[in-house]
Length: 277
Image 1 (spheres, rainbow, N blue to C red):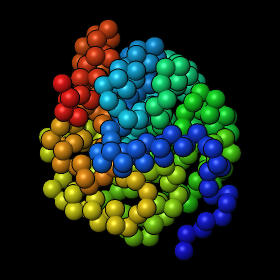
Image 2 (cartoon, helix red, strand yellow):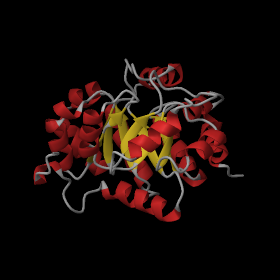
Image 3 (tube, one colour):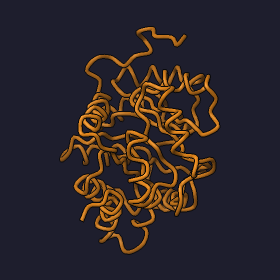
Image 4 (cartoon, rainbow, N blue to C red):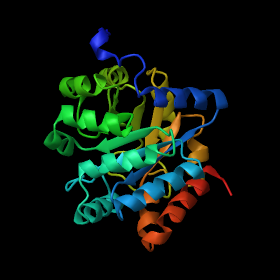
């Protein structure tokens, strides 16, 4: 039976409440949300702020702020290239906080820091949590931290009102599913297929069946990522998950032209996927 000790729960009034309110609103509106991913610092941090604002205006319900990392093993070539460009521009984790602060000046959209463990530990869990909380970030999603090893990270985040989000894979067994459902604070990020991130023409034919089976086993909302890139994907997944995560399609559009048009190109991807004019 899952441990429900008080120290495992977020404190009341936590900033992570933005995500909880979002998912309640999506349920009330009976629609599938869209979480947009960007690599911070690609092409530069000021343009990243403009891109996020355009994504929110286009209809994105939440934003994943990708922290650039030199060895993003779960990411495909599009996001890997974006991380390399951001690092070449000198983007550091500290710049992600600046980006979040600027975004917070104009919107209450939920902000999720998306990272591998290494950049967080280089800064230190407590210091990261302090800076992230002050910058207005709501939660942290770590691709390579299992819940069994997350006690220190969870404590640092929870003490400062932030949530911690975990991933589920298609290969997850019932015990792993139960552990992630208990450990993930705001929602569960469900990886649609094995392999790395990247826009795909077709989704795995078994995905809808797996999602329905998964939803019967968990209490937390499910957000589905890896490969979601078209309006057809969005329509297909609506009704089978709480939200979709769009990353490579947005990041690819940002790179597909001069920085001056990056925000418009990114916003066009979101409008297209959501079926907006």
